Length: 573
Image (cartoon, rainbow, N blue to C red; front, side):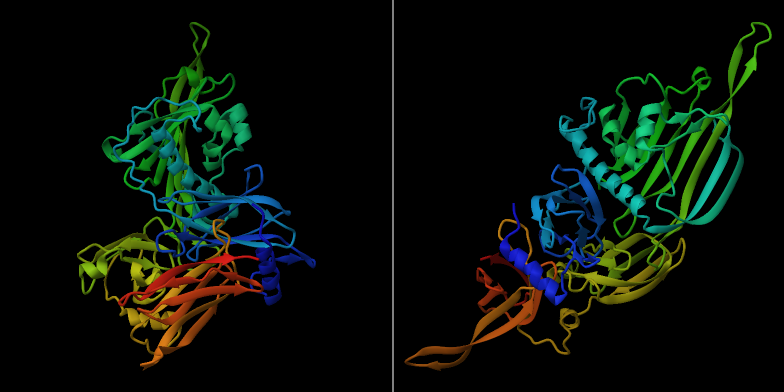
C-alpha cells in the first residue's frame, strides 16, 4: 500500500509548521514512521506495548516500548517498504504491512488493540510433544508460547536499550550435595549502569559449542537469556510440551523444552518456562544441563542447573530480578589398586545475583525494589455505579488496580517513594488519568492504607479543558482523523464541530436558527479534542487539510454522557 498524496502533503505542511517534522541531520531530511497504540474499545492510549519495525522481508529492525501516552517513533535507515507490529499481554497482536515511505515522508499510524482473554488454566497439558515450535505446533502449545514470547521480547528489549541503573548483589556459594545446605558464601553489592546486568554467551556460540565451556581454570557454565530462548536455532532444535504445575507451582502452566537430538559436541539444556495460569504472565525459568562434560558425566549429580526469575516493571518493561547457576565440583583421585581415575562429587558451586533496586536512567523513584510495599484502600462512596470498571492508578509507575463492587482496591509491588493516586473511570476516556485524588508515601516492605474520594466529573472536565466553570449540558468530543481502511492518521487537520442553535420560531418560516461551531487541530497522531459541545444535539464533524476534506460525520451525545468519541474518515484528493 503506497502512501497517499494527501499524506505526503500532510508531512510537508507539518514540516513547515514544526509539528511532526522528522529529525534532520546535516540539513538532510529523514524518513520517519510514528504513531500511537490505542485500546480498541475506548480509544485511550495503551502503555506497555512493544512496537516492532519490520523491513520488506519481514525481519525485525527496531523496537520501541511505549509508555503511558501510547506513542512511538522510528527514524528509518532508508526510504522503502516497511511494516509495524504491536504486541502486549492481554491483547491480540496487530500488524500493518506494506507502508511505503519516501525520503522526506513522515508517516503516522494508529494501532487499536483488541482485548484478548489470557487465562491458561484448564488447558490440555497432554498435547503431543512438538520438536519445532512454529506454525505446526499444537494450538495450546502455541498459545502458551505466544504469551511467553511477548514477555521475553520485552526482556530482550529492556536489556538492549539499557533503561535502568541497578543496585546489584552477586554471590558465590558452596553447597552440600543433596541437601543444598550452604557451606560457605561470598557476596558483594554494587551500583551498575549496564544494558545487561546478566549476560549470557552469544546465541551462535551456545548453539555451536554448548552451554559449558572447558578452560584451564575449570568448566564455565552459561545460562540462557531471553535472546537465546527466542532464537530460531534454539526453537528449531528443541522439542516442546505443556506441563501442569503441582505443589507450590499449583495454578501455573509450564512450557517444557528438551533437546531434539543429543549433541555430538557440547552440553545442552532442558527446562520449563513457567507462566501464571490466570494471567499468562511469565514467572520463571528452571533448567538443567544435559550431557555434562567429563568427568562430571560419570558422577551421579542432582541439582545441577539454574533458575531465572522474571519481573514485570510498572512501566511495562520486564527484567530478570534474580538468577543462579549451580555447577558440580568434581575431584578426581587415582585408584592405587586398579590404576584408574575415579571422579567424586565434592560439592556444588552456585553463582548468582539479585537486583536489589532499579531506577530509570531519567530519574524518579525506584522502579523496582526487592522489598516493595503495597497500597490497600477503599473508595467512598462505594457504590456499584462508582466502581464498575474503575481503577486506581499510580501514574508515575503505570501501576493500577481494579476497584471491586465494595470499593476496595490493592496495589502490590510498589517500590519505596512518594506518589500521587488517580481514580480512573471508563466513562471519562482517560481524562482523569492524571487527576490526583490522594498522595501516599510507601516505605520498604510497608503497607499503606488510603481512602480515595472520586472527584466530581465536572472538576475533571474543567481541569482537562482549562476552564473555571463547566457548563451543564455540555460534553467533550474526542476523536481521530484517519484514512479509511489503512490505519494511517492525518495530523494537523483542521477539525470543525458545528450544530444548529434555535433562535426563534416563525409561524410561516418555521424554526429559525444559527449555526454554531467549535474547532481544533489534529495532533501529531491524528487525535483531537473539542470541549464544551452540547449534548442531545446533532453535531456535524468535518476535517480539512489543504484541498482535501473528510467525509462529514454526525454524532449525538446523550444527556448524562461527559465524553464521547468519533472517528473522522479523511477523503484525500
